[in-house]
Length: 76
Image 1 (cartoon, rainbow, N blue to C red):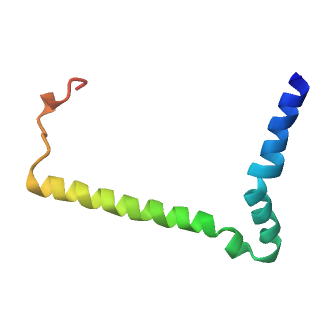
Image 2 (cartoon, rainbow, N blue to C red):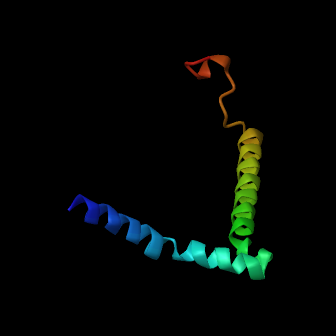
Image 3 (spheres, rainbow, N blue to C red):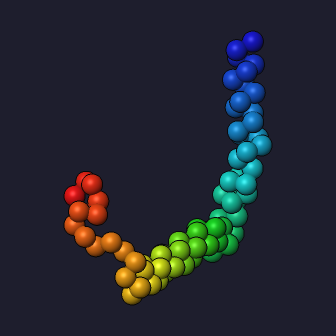
């Protein structure tokens, strides 16, 4: 019974959940740029998020909304 349970888990991961990864592995042999498009998209999203975060920090700093008192945080 336990053997069937673990074989079912193995089947789920190897035959169903890893299908997109198998596709990307096969695609990499034909076109490296297309296979790594997901990586480039994640990099772009991260870069845009970083720019947004820095811009928000600048806005908070310009408006003076941040409490810069050394005793503002209990761990200081």
